[in-house]
Length: 188
Image (tube, rainbow, N blue to C red; front, top):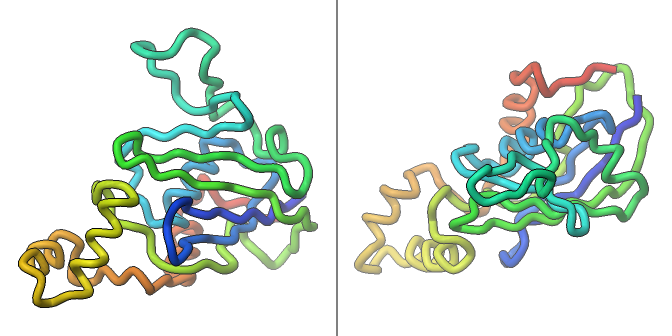
């Protein structure tokens, strides 16, 4: 089994929010979406799309998409769209907030028998809360949460949740969630 080490960056956010993940090259794009949801901290409550060049992958919407416009993500493996280090995928989650992610294949490594994949190796910062208004709304939320005297502080603290901390990332918790989801795990 071949393992891909990929780097995911949430675009247009400073300081950066990112993850480094190892997963099987045979992971489908549908599985990749589910892995990204867990690794980034999203709740999978919105539509998404993966783009390689101009080719769209995901779930076609018969109201808007012509037949063939969107390739079914469950039929395509990661190795088919990321074949060499440096290759990239553009992942969009939540067409309202429009969270854009750059996914880059960093390295192809051999699988180790003692490791369960997928796994998150590294990363920085928590993901923005769902439905916070995209990058602009997230910046506003962070400004409010750093000022206990702001008129909206209490409301936004309750809305974001008492435990929300933009600077905290638990790789252990992410990996536990990934490994609990047996349909994503690949043991070499």
